[in-house]
Image (cartoon, rainbow, N blue to C red; front, side, top):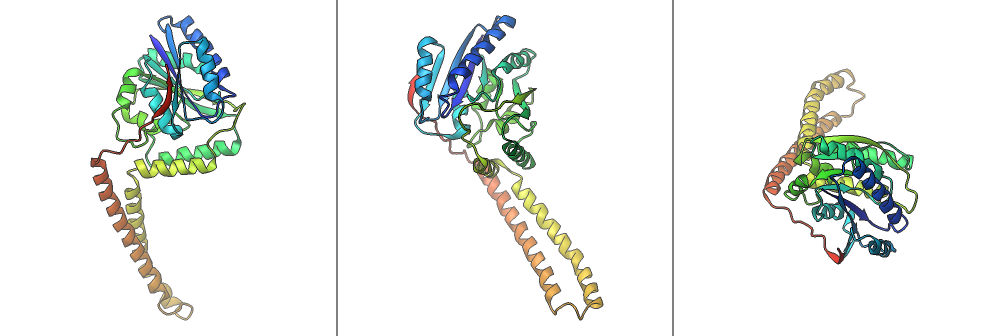
Length: 313
């Protein structure tokens, strides 16, 4: 059986060699315990790095013919590039792992155990992290937001790190997501998931391409493109405002009678009227959004194609 190690890269010249060495150690450990996994491929998909990442991988490829390299013609972001990678590998199982060494390659053995037990996917869930405390909390807020909008049903702190059966990868091809992030796609395709906790390590070399702004942008983009709860939330808010307005009518009349000298003429009526108008507008917007969602769900999304300027097999 063949293990495909899919490694998305962007400016990882300082990490890629060490990452490859750690992955080979993990494969050797798997072979000791499960000899049926006798072949592998180390599949690097590079997001048009402007450093020496590609040169480093090509140098490694001269010594190991199991290394493959796809170089994208531009930076397609942290969602499309890895997804294209897992769709184009040839293994019986696919190990998706970042090149920054924050996700430990040694987890491969534990993931294999989950697959052998009959699970479709073995995924890593971050238990603790040695990264910047502020960014750890921002990531947590990001996962919480996605979960609040019903976009992820699995446990938070999952970024795609894991091992997947090739049959599940085939099912990933059939999806209606414009940007098929693993957090959203995986629970749509299978509930048979093996969860493994791990410590997210500190990045030793280079800097992450994601910052606070990137997480905000990614969260908003994911919510707008994939969430069906926005109309529902707007409708619930409008009903709540309407109910509040109705309750305020007798309260306002009572206050007017008790403190008629303190309240200016017409102020109470204006407040109630504004609440009613705003709640009505929200209800109308929610209906329009719901109708728009129904129309868009019938349309086939425009898929962005990931193209390569160089392929080294």
